[in-house]
Length: 222
Image (cartoon, rainbow, N blue to C red):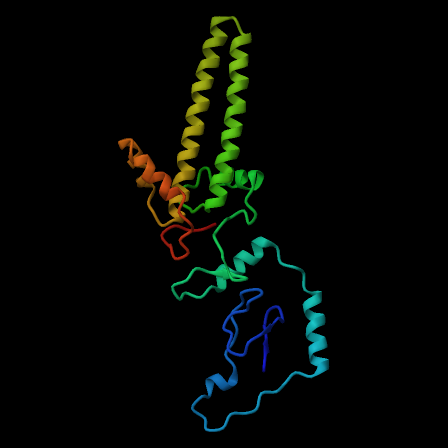
């Protein structure tokens, strides 16, 4: 059985492969595919042992791609055929951090706090939501302990005002992140108004849990 090799990473592929199974790069068409109307096709040239050895050395010298670079490569070269992008036969979701966790996703929340007109991946949103909740609880306890220790009425009033301000800042911050998450699912942030109906909050939670819509283009992905 004949094979061809990836133009980007040198991996062995099937002759009819359009994308690399290893790195996701788009493969050029073979010469015999472009000349199907010809009555006689040229015999494929098998690579020599020396050529294979050089290709293996080239692959070994290439630096290993990070998860973020792999994800970017797949998303750039994905085939628009009705299916989501795949990497190693697995569906790839968008996450700006590349490796969502408490630290990385919280950085995304801070970075995009004043830029709600973008998208935020599902994993980045929920990890950042957890990190923000932990931070909020810690600040609340610190403020409450400060109020209990302080006995002067003036300082207590200032503490209460700071506590209310702290709550408002976190509330607005979460709303902005929810808008970015809705954009990633190709839904407008105006859907948050369903929360005003009470039972509509269930619909908002369902939308926030939706996977990335790879074909959404109304809002940019950083």
